[in-house]
Length: 175
Image (cartoon, rainbow, N blue to C red; front, side, top):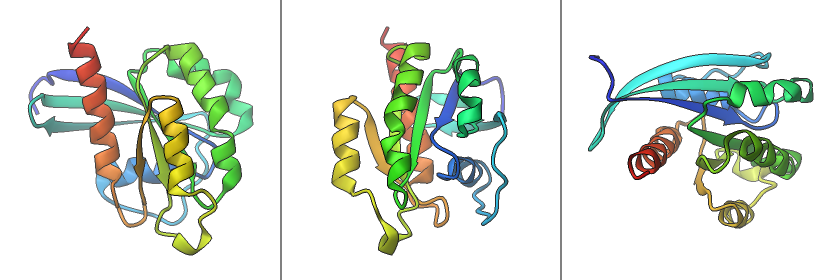
């Protein structure tokens, strides 16, 4: 790829084991592994892609560890972020309930930069603890876009990253 038209920084936020790393690897390599080790601190990845109507985009993806012990580092990791994917595990209600903390941390560090809410693990239909309507209600209350995904099947994963990228670029181009 030639010199990109845009370079953006995306952060993945959410509690430990919600599937952030699986989402990133599904997006970058279109692969899924059952057993990722928990991200310690931050995992930095990059994907270059063409986006219709925008040209070449280079996305720097910061996959933040979700453990409470890394909370003090969040502000540092969020520095310069153009947007975030906020991920929860639809089979674990607690990961949904903790989203307020993540939203607050992101807004303190990045103001009104865009966030897309991701309801992950939708392939586990029999274990769902958070409904689509609950997630949509939260997204609307914070003026976030909302997408349901499955890193395992690949369902809507690319759409989530592309949607956030478009929101970031539109926001920055219309300032």
